Length: 411
Image 1 (tube, rainbow, N blue to C red):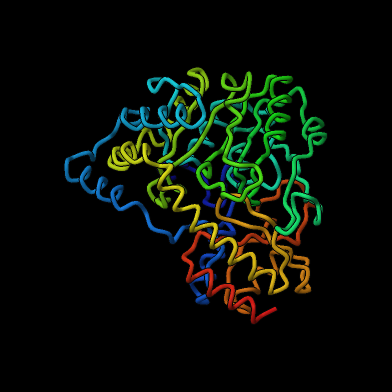
Image 2: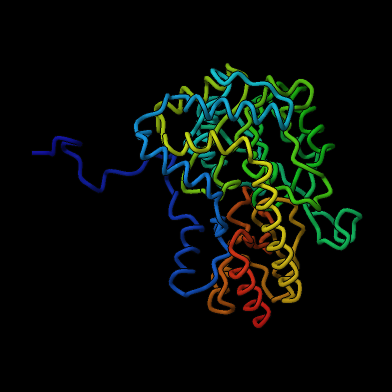
């Protein structure tokens, strides 16, 4: 007699759903395990070693002890929704109603997945700038949509913006326009950008906004590094596309606490946007996690009002690490690219006789005692460059310095 579930089937008949077929262990997990097993300095994953605000940690402990340990409202703790709305108004001049235009999520990754599931039907197309965070193609795939890669162009070395700081990446407006089809529904924008450290310029944001208005696209903008734009970035402070003319009504803005407050394990994110778009995300989110992190939400509601002062300290620490790593890579012969924000920078590995970033990253722990991530893990389009590697500088200064010393002796 067959079992109660799947009666009459052999075990070999079972297979995963097509949407997850071929999805295995990520390169991030693989490289982290390689760092652990070899004792290498891990400059792969974006897991910060920087401190968190002492008062924030104390407030979480107080919230736990005071009994804030049950489900919060499905849309998030009212105090945090109000704090997020106040933050968007204070920084960007954007007014959101915390009752139905702000949604708290289990990190930004859930917000992205729920947005794509809530906005896309099978066969729809989603535009994303390539290379991109690996959750973007996965989210599109789970929604039955097709992710269409719009390549960012490597900036010529020696150009005015690149002079003295390494090259960067720029928008190809013609490629963006050419990628739009009648099936395009959503544009995924990530600025500040992972994995390149790029900040989209005002002119680039204006060009993206123009395309979205012309074609009636919804923008889902991932701004988790919004407070981590370095003071020497030529773009100035972070700007959100939602603040441009005609964009608030078609934009979902996603951010989170993890990167700004160095609490990535808390997984508290949020979405802001017009009520109809936020409702689409909430309709999915309620059947994913429903709600989470009550004491964290309560503490972050108090911390968000003073985020600017705290973030200035984090930027200074990250900026020092970025410069230390960039200079060390250059001395080691690995050409670094400019990073204007966030946790990461790119490096060209060809001077070490490598053109394959995957092989390079597998050999680097034994060769130099350092772990990095091949940028090929972030490319969507076939035939993308294979000679780039992403290094993280959100570690402690001691860790970055140790990595630089090891790389310098291995070139």
